[in-house]
Length: 399
Image (cartoon, rainbow, N blue to C red; front, side):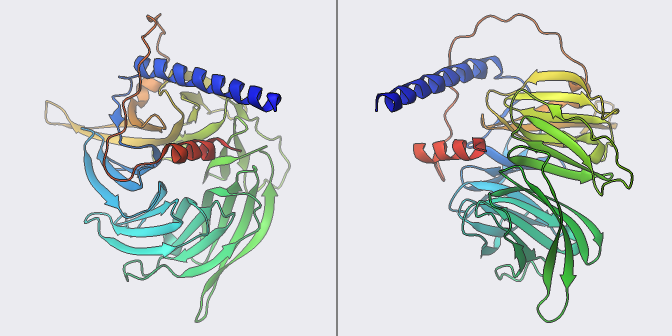
């Protein structure tokens, strides 16, 4: 009994020390990246034009103007934190997943709820739309992956299920897909044990069409939780709680080659942005591990070069997205410039000019700041209890 009490005491001391460190860093970083403060924690983010679409812990999806930080639209209707979002019909329809186990479809401009689908028996954790296949794929804490028909998303009915995968033994929190024809695709599913399963999806026609999934291989190059995946140029990029980003060739080359070395970090990598897979097509990798953003030159993937480390937030970074910022200068000429938007459990979005991120900034000694308490969340709407906040943190952290 004494051991348990001692353990609890030590854990509490560690938690207090972490809390104090975060308070100090909150003061030190309070103006970095022109922060946009949110009422809740951003769990998922997508950028469209000059707007950030946010899946928020306050049970809403929020649209924020990246220039002035104002909320433009708020989508209310979920009964728990909104964990993920996606789009269909050329972004005219917003799709959200939540702790309430439902998938909701909304008119992205009017905010009208189009339909709500009881999708899983536990939290919906990730959503992926394959537009060319009119297919929505969802992953859940119930360890399953489900397929949904997006051929008639505006009919107001719950989405029709088109099959499922139930072979994972841990929650599925990362999905990626690559269409190979109008009726087939390669699907990657990643779970919290670090297993990535690779499937061939084939559409079976008839009066009741379904997606048949055939397991092609299992990738075990990570030791624990898969947090994010991206596929392009014949490569699968993966971020894991085992403190690494890894890049593997898929399909595997006909002739065996030496695997690329993992890009190691001091702590779990929650998110990344491979600019080579974006419209910029530049050989840079941006990662979020803990509260630090790192920038790598990966023009030689076998020898990644760390260009910059940025103390960007005072809590874990949850998403990194490209923002192609369009402005008009005093001369009336339009300008286009790439920026990076970061989201964090510190309740902010921050904006960074890519050209500055690629150049390390000289560090200057700073006075030790006085401890401050991070600003409280704004009242109103869905509020998480202390126990739910703790559960959210544990779910975001556990392997």
